[in-house]
Length: 385
Image (cartoon, rainbow, N blue to C red):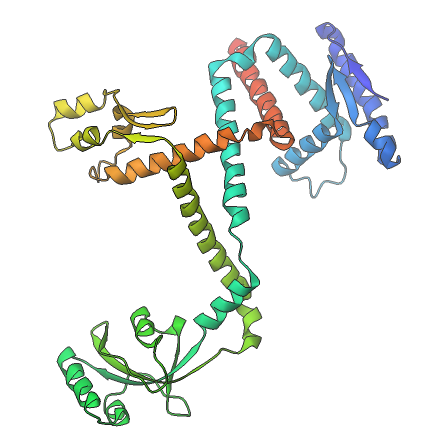
């Protein structure tokens, strides 16, 4: 049931590949209806020079094809085509490996970049996304706080002097209601004669002023956009719980973003505490873009180490190239961004995620695709005239 493809001459390869595809068609459809135990024992569809092509390889090829082509509307699926392509690709990769293309500097650099990118994503998931948890209590507490109804009596005037004058009269015992009727805000009272606001419908300064009041207490003078307010708390009402489900998804998205940001900041701070960071502050302070062209040119060639993080080094030249020309004084911001990124990179690679099965398989598929593309570019395309 399994086809082994050895390395014959070029004339015989096509025949072997075609025969293998025909056999594999039978294997594929036979195994589709076989018991689970049989399918597990027969996971290998073909062997090309000792290199197995598995059912997972076929599934991955079909998945890629589905993304690149509109297969959703296709009436038929040519399995033979994809198995043949897998064998062709595997033969090309093996030839490229024989030529040592996997040792090309550009190939190795791209593989390292891929490992780093995937490792950082895994680290982000493990240390940030999975730990930025929003509980049911978090959701309900936010809803109750954000939609709590403050019943207020409000005085609004146009000058700070008038507001202070009214405040002194109120402290002397005059009735709040008399001033609020004479100087009301520009919105309506409810049936009970109160102005009803929630945290999300009032300016932050107003909320800060009334949040800690008990019923019957009043605020000082609170300025908001050219107006001056004095407020008296009449009471607080909890929001209707039956409205919670309607806004639940929005609250969850908002809180998840906040939790992610909080966890990110917390984790970066942890990495900084644990790392061996050495910054040449004297050298940093000497970097000045206001100097003449000669000095700036010298900075662009300066290889002195400005920062060391474990075994990683940031030379002056590289640091200067990251400084924005529009804000050459943003040295601390640029330095922090570099440190954060480098600390994450170092920690991500130290986890050795690329040795885990999931990423190892993805890395192998990526490396093979990269080697195949390089083979076409440097060997095939280079000989086309």
